[in-house]
Image 1 (spheres, rainbow, N blue to C red):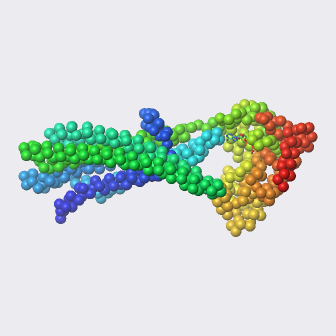
Image 2 (cartoon, rainbow, N blue to C red; image 1 turned 120 degrees about the horizontal axis):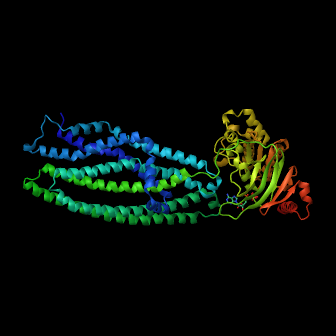
Length: 632
Ligand SMILES: Nc1ncnc2c1ncn2[C@@H]1O[C@H](COP(=O)(O)OP(=O)(O)OP(=O)(O)O)[C@@H](O)[C@H]1O
């Protein structure tokens, strides 16, 4: 038989359970925020103030594709909130059941109990609204990452990768939460607040007089608390960001810290940052204590007034015990939902702040597009630099007139003092940046009109500091191939052979399947360089750009890399641009271009340049030879 205790447990248990899902998810999200709040900086408060309706529209448009799910979720929410709201009324009726004169009609049982039982048995129905949240986050992350990957190099010069990553992780999470679970919390709070207010009026109009006095006090308390809470949250996020910044930077450079014996200094720097956090949490705790104290005090006064006034009405026969109980519960409910509404508002503002940074990334159009244009990937006559001018953003101009040809099928070496802009020429040729003046043409076609991805795909590049990915040697070699799965074993072996890498790869127990570690950390500098050369060669590119990396290598590694390069250049019929640091080794180049003070100062074969009296190249060679003698 259905006992009174079962009856009570079901009634009280339902709202606890149904809310449990949302609350657990919300708590999880909040904890995550805490952990990743490091990126919330001073800009946050600025953004919050500047949030506009346009931002509001944009943020809600994220949930657009999931309208159906959201409507379903909100329907469940509406039903569950209604039941939740009816609960005090039903409880009131239960109390009145003890009053023999006001027994319920057994032939007309309360339908709300049946509904409550349904949701108690099917709590999963209430989780429906949670799914769009993760989907919104997924969409946002994917679209922002896609946009970031398509940005030009000038963008990456300005934006730190660490910050972009935290936008992708933290900001996306905040935005996703604010338009999903937060929305459901807000909707629930609003429904509960309006519903309980209405039901208070319905339960007893006379009692509402008391509430008109109490509500402003409660709202005022919440308003003050909300404002303070927001202030301390922002301060806390900044302090946590500061501490994490110190920890991240120092730990990622732990080698340098160790070599400079700076452990104690760093320990202190971190401790200072942690003390900042402690200072803020003390203030936050004090404010919270005061606010909660005053809220409880107001609450007790309100409740006592309700009870006092209510018992007066009961004694006059104008109110029942049950009605008074219902009224009290609704008063508590409406107060609690007011607090939830303020929480919803804060989270929404946070979401707006975070979204503006994400939308900025998502909507940014790169200056140099990834694709589009003439599909040209070979050189028949020559690549020409025609009066090229260039300067990096926020720096003085680097080139004012660079004019020279890179003839097809020939080896062109670029030399110049450190910082003269040799690597920058390679970047311009790859169209990582556009010249600010003049132009680069390929067989007379302006590089700006050529499809950038198609062009780059036909260029094999070996950078000064080779970058390998933390995967196998094989994967690293075929990384740049358009269709890696179609690269044959013979092609991989041939590329490794040509780059002088085959011997050391064969000596590894797992050979081509050897994992190279993060950034190739388990390989020597020379080995990394030779794998990078193999990677450049495996696609049999039409053009080769070699930025010599010799400074970081020891004599043996340098020798091995040089042998690889020489072998490669001797057999090459490709158009080659080699940025040379060791001048004695470019005697085989068809032509040498000397860059100095923003223009091409000398131009010719090795022997021709050596013959120029007081020539820059001759001086560079002399300096280097002298330098070698000094160092040995
Ligand atoms: N991404 C960048 N943003 C701003 N300035 C840059 C950037 N890359 C290089 N520079 C600056 O441009 C100048 C030329 O650099 P570049 O690397 O082209 O010289 P380099 O001749 O190849 O030097 P090195 O022989 O030392 O490798 C330098 O003053 C450098 O500080």
